[in-house]
Amino acid sequence: MIARVATDAVDHAEVLDRVVAPVAERLEPLLGEAPTAGWLQGRWLGHPLHPVLTDVPIGCWTSAWMLDVFGPAEHDDVATWFIGLGVLAAVPTAVTGWASWLRLPPELKRTGVVHAGTNSIATALYAASWRARRRGDRWRGSAWPTPVRRWPPWAPSSAATSRSAPTSAPGRWTAPLARRSE
Image (spheres, rainbow, N blue to C red):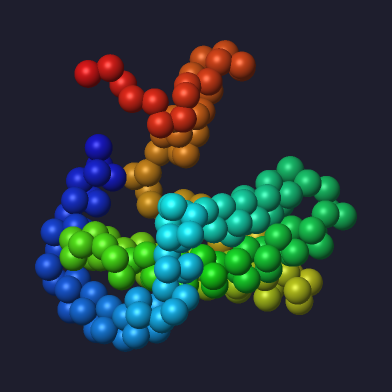
């Protein structure tokens, strides 16, 4: 409920148009009109490419977190590798996100710039984590992304909101994209 209210507020925050307009003006010739625009937007796939690519950095960073929390110390190098791969994968993910963003209506572009800004901060924190880990400072390396894991504070856990999450007993799953009866 709170997340929906916050998203609607951002959608209607016309003050963000001061950011949206210049960003769109700069990106349109690079990503909107380029010969590769259709490819970056995922037209060949029949679906935007950006959501598909987001699984790589999210998966890498989640795997690193799992190793940090539950893995033995000898897996520190693997966690560092996952962090670095996630940072690298964030670049094409962001490029495809901006390419798709150019096709959105104005109110969703507002949400898109906030989304891009917060994800840029998250990526910078993970880059700092990677750098600290490469220098042998596992504590700082695992501490840098902590704000990302706690933001936004009102958001429920993904397991609680996923439509494919277990509903009661193991083996009983709801169908993806299932609709509630009206």
